[in-house]
Length: 318
Image (cartoon, rainbow, N blue to C red; front, side, top):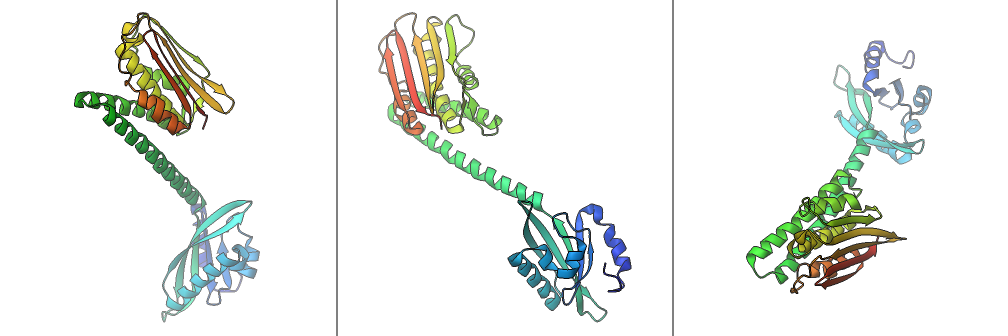
C-alpha cells in the first residue's frame, strides 16, 4: 500500500488474510492509479513496478487495453465486471480472472475500484485438455460408426437368413467392443497385438488339444489398426470354430504380426487335421478381402482349401 495515499490500513489487513487463498488484490482510484497491491503473482512484476505503471506493467498491450477499458466502465456505470486476462511468462501462457468491484462513497459515487485477481491457468489447461479429449472421442466415434455401417452393409448383402444375419452381426459387433475396451483401457494409445489376439480368440478357444501358436512381433497397434485387426481375428476364428481347427481340436494354427519397416503384416496359417468339405467361402471373405484392406490402405490375400486356410493382410503401421 502506498503510504499516505488513503486510510486503507484496515482494508489492507483484511486483504492480507486472503493471501493463502491465492488471490491478488488491488485498489485503484478513479484515474486508475494503483494505491494498494497485495500478494502479486510470481508471473507479475513486483509491487513497485505495479505502483509506477499500473496495468501496463502487468499485461501486454492489447490485454492491458482490455483490462483498463473494463475498469473504466465500472467507474462510469458503478456495475461490477469480470474479465479474463492473459500473459506469457517463462514461455508459458498464464490466465487470470479479474473481478472488478466499484468503491462507492457515502453519496454513492464511484471513487475507485477493488480488483480481486485469481490465477486460473490450471483451469484453462484442464479445459483445453478436456476439449482435446472430447474432439478425440468424437473422431474415434465417427470412425467406429463408419466401421459398424460397413459391417452391417456387408452382412446384409451376404446373409439372407435373418437368424444367420443376427448371429454374424452380433459376433462382429462384439469383436469391435472387445477391441474398443482394450484401446480404452490403454488411454486410447492402442492395443498390443498378443493381448488383442488372446482377447479375440478367447470366446472360441476353450482348453483343447491342438497346436495354437502366436508368434512374430508384438507391436502396439494404433487404435484404428487395432479395431480392424481385431475384426480380422474374429472372422478367422469364427470360421475356424465352424469348420476348421477350432472345431476339430486337431491340426495347427499359427498367427502373428511381423513389423516390416513402416508396415505390418498380419498372418493366419491354419492347417486342418482332416480335410474340410468345400463350402461357399462367404464366411467373412468380403470383410477380410474388401472391407479391411480398404479401411487400412492395405493388401490382403485369402486362400481357402480343404486342408488349410491362409490369410495375410499387409498394411501401413498407422
